[in-house]
Image 1 (cartoon, rainbow, N blue to C red):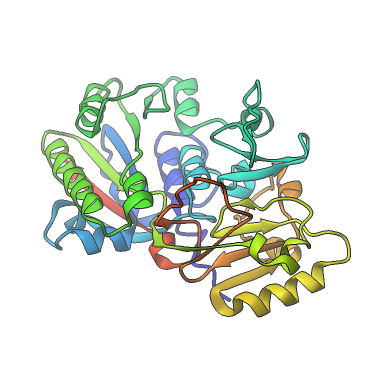
Image 2: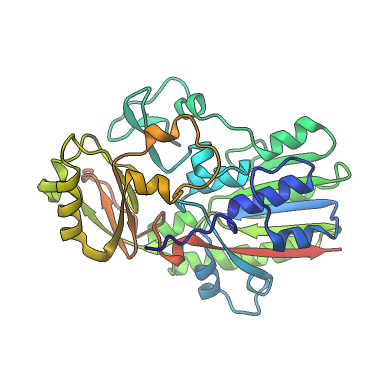
Length: 367
């Protein structure tokens, strides 16, 4: 069994390098290649995360002489699972998923005794929304930007549709980046762009819509970087993508009846809470049904292998972990049951293929 995440060379380590550069104590070891780039002491550090733009996808889409591909320093790992909720929180905090506990699209929260869709703030498979932000209540976190600004010596800004500074489109996002440079002796700008991920889910990772989007990103970032001075621009993704075929547990009654509640985390890394006394039966049936399509880990192995990362586990982490997790090695994804009228994604992420787990580290130094 091999999980394609290296917690010594992942997004958390990248965030640790940035923390260290701005005088903030990092929680984990830093990334050597980024430390080397930062040794030139740039006044501005700009981190741009393009959702879903994984290492393999970028290389398949653009020519080797294109701006982005020609500036790839190396591939690095996402975190587990390679999905936006876990990965972007690690980028923003410098913590591994087991430490910040934003483990996936949906997690079981013991205090509400339900699986909660984290970004939608509602109970899974219902229309019940919480009056307060339930995940921020139980799993609050402080960002690197917060820590830098709290110290007061340097300047930091978060540019995102969901952050302090919004934008209209990618071109406008680049303009907002330029407007926030050179405020102090050192400046950190973190900009999050929600594509090409949305197009990948809808049309597939290699669709013409995605190719057009990545080419636009390549053009705009080259234009941005050509107009900068004394700046290190870091371009990454949170994860890549994999074309998927979905199966539903409700079609496998012998497995479905073993479950204490709905699945959590993600369809390509599904967490199972099993009824008392049925663990061995579930494991046997699951293995026979799905053979080598998934890595199936039990609860003890999840902790033994540090699947969600190293460091001190969040107080809620233990209760979020069920009896088993299945991690897709191929294109198969597992969902609890069908939703009437729902159009499923063509492509997704959170599995164990390198298309999902490897992200590019693009470095552009402007003197």
